[in-house]
Length: 243
Image 1 (cartoon, one colour):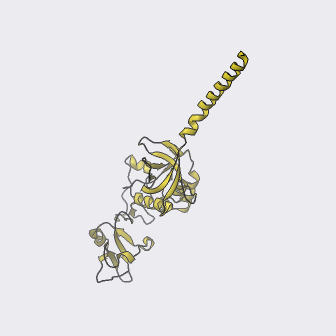
Image 2 (cartoon, helix red, strand yellow):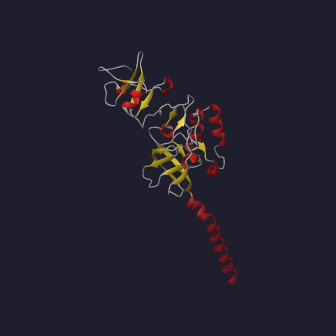
Image 3 (cartoon, rainbow, N blue to C red):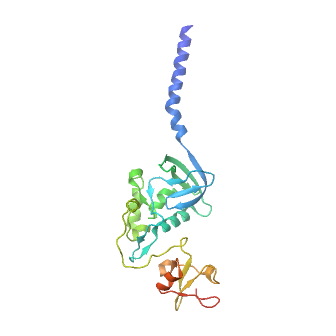
């Protein structure tokens, strides 16, 4: 009678050992999903999820960080990176995130994908609006960064301090003295270039909603009327104005 009991005990012990080895690995895996809103270029807030989600293995410019473009002009690259992330997740904004870790700020560190199964982390690095954060990624996005550098995409078009260096206090050296180029979302005055003049449009003006800003043509956003005037733009006159 003892023999069967001993066998059963050993079998039960083996199951306990297996559970202790396999159990935690399964329980630690966490997938969160939902409609996302952009906090900054590498952080999302998901509806129904208490913690914010920090994109694993990448580093985007900080909100107030400035960089220079190919023309040597200064622009708010942190705001631009946030815009790029918003464009990537789209209007629907639904993402699925697989947790990799938790950081010291209590954020979920994860790899996230859009509804179209585009990995957000990789796409941000490939677009040039984030860099491979090698200290944590172990080079997972090195290939995407190399491609962005080759194509002079995003940040790589001009010059910038890495976000990690910027957080440590390093700043870009003084450039050509051009004013900071604002981007949509941070400054709301539209600097439009018409056939005969450079006109700025205030929010609420008659033509404001119909005016589209094309930064490749030299058009830009301003944070104040004084900034617009100092840069050579004049206020709109008449009911419709130039477009």
